[in-house]
Image (cartoon, helix red, strand yellow):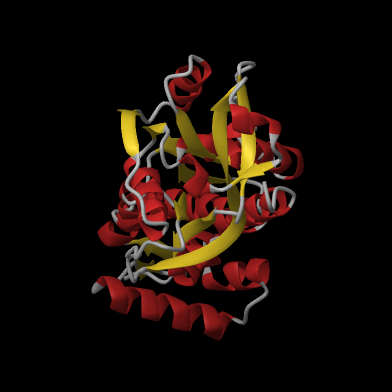
Length: 301
């Protein structure tokens, strides 16, 4: 293995033509230059210089190393500049995976803040639902994932991941306009036991069934869809009622649908998940900071 300091000194000796001239240029003593060159020759396993009278001449190995030395030093310099840019948040790439309603609400706001303060950081967006989104972080397919959990469900989080809580997302009951309970400020889930329901993604559906079971009834699920716009459209046509997270209602709001709070309130926890080592990466840390700031403004959504 070459020592980059020795390569730099070697390059200067070749340019200057002698140890003494290189010593003056680099601010070293001549014995220090001699020691570095001997150390470099030990590393390569062969002499790099030979003396012809008072002049030094490169050996065949020295000629070969000389052809590469400038390139090596340029590459090291470029690498140092790139590392400095990354650590000073002038550049960097962060891959973020989130569930659809987070990608439509939290992510755009966070990226707008990031673009304003750190325009050199590039973010790649992916979309997936938990638990698959958590596995993608472990597999190295993304750097940060946003996922949600429900308090009543036992959900496994891979041991490799660190959880950063962002916000609680309040659930809302969607009723067709004109529904008798639409005139009330809040409704109890048990009061809707006889309704037909539209259920959402597997994790949300599991929580919904769990909450109903806790209240002693099994709901009639008429339709199941992951598409939140479809859920609202079905409710609007009177084909059922639904339970939907507040983040979704921030960007979808059908004019023929009324949302009412649950009493008692039901919430899901939205968190970011990263590998522990990624917390030390400046760009990743900055994206997390922006997500925390944006989420803090939506607590109780």
